[in-house]
Amino acid sequence: MSTASIPDPLQTKARPKSSNNIAKLTLWPLVAATFFMVCGGAYGTEDIVHGAGYGRALLILALTPLVWSLPTALMVGELSSTLPAEGGFYAWVREGLGNFWGFQEAWLSLAASIFDMAIYPTLFIAYLERLVPWVGEGHHGVLIGLVMILACTALNLAGIHAVGLTSFWLFLVISGPFALIVLMAPFRAGTLAHVAAAPVTSTVGLLGGTLVAMWNYMGWDNASTIARGVERPERTYPRAMIVSVTLVALTYLLPVLAVYVTGLPSSAFETGSWANVAGLVGGNWLRALLVLGGMVSGFGIFNALVMSYSRLPLAMAQDGMLPRVFAKVHPKTRAPWVAILACAAGWALCLGLGFESLVTLDIMLYGASLVLEFVALVALRIRRPEMDRPFRVPGGLAGTILVGVFPTVLLTLSLVRSHRETVWGMNGLTVGVLAILAGIAIYYATAPLRRRHGRQAGLSPH
Image 1 (cartoon, one colour):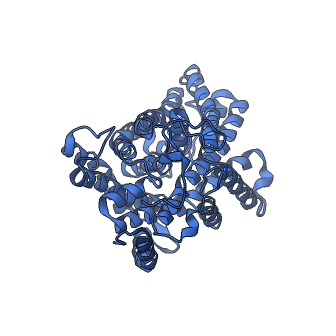
Image 2 (cartoon, rainbow, N blue to C red):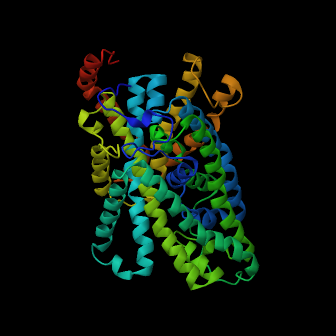
Image 3 (cartoon, one colour):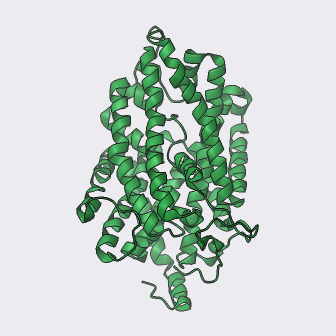
């Protein structure tokens, strides 16, 4: 990767002390940022409980991190510590499989973000509307969503350190209400069995619940794109991944288990109902805290993902994959301001998209990029055995191969289900295939950029 024309003080391993240098992320701010890239609280688990019931919901939420999150976290731990490069997973795949697959990795991730990022301003607005009904009138919600996008853009322009610290404090804010539910629910044991609940209309079963859980547990590799802004990445990333997997699993499991003890029917859960559950457990004050937590969750997730996704155009421009303008960074904060503004504009245009029908499509596109990362992990073990690997997936080459088996199986199940979804009047699988084909076409259309970059850097464009 050539970055000769862009000086980068983040290459130093020690925490900079000069005001002209940039403070790096340490363990806990990185854990907090990863938490928001993956989770953002127990919001989103309601449909699993409603459709699958408490028993299967708890089973799904307990097993998914073992067969989906932990293998991914191990892979991210090894590759982030081995190749702590700008662009993270894009750089891994490019190094292991070549330019073509590196470009597809970045394209698939950015395409998935189009379907993913629209939900978080929508989540923020939905919870705000519970406190201020005026938000739901006319175009007020869209305007507030735009304000939220602008706020997250401004925070990201301030640099990685600002986003990391913001994520840390937001994590504490959203964790408080759920911690109170966990602490207070045992005192209401068996007292909520009489609560009237709507008929179970959800078709979420074991497979559907697993797919929803996969969406709730995905995004571990997103933190890798900021590796050059992390202090001692070879040590910090593996520790952050293990801590984050444990933290996210407990965030989902403990509140559901606590409410199960109260006897509340599982059919009382529906999208956005955690606020109502909080009201039953602790009263209106706790309900209000959950509503505020939902707003904070939407803001925190969007804010952290802007930091992650915006590093992809930056890294691709540095490698001649995109126009050089995307490689521009702020002279003081080193934030890739052109990439941040371009991504924010694209996501703002998607504010009106509904999310429910797009979850499977999001998983399919993200999953395709994740499979490429597991293939790159194996390819680098075979092609570059001499590389310094501060952290390794245990089990040698066989363990490296096996760690990708369960995630690949789960992603195959998402393909089986995708034909049931309709997006923009088309079959969901068709939309996903078209998105993949578009990435291939764009790669060949941008060939002149790579040739010019190769001539300037004295490298092969292939």
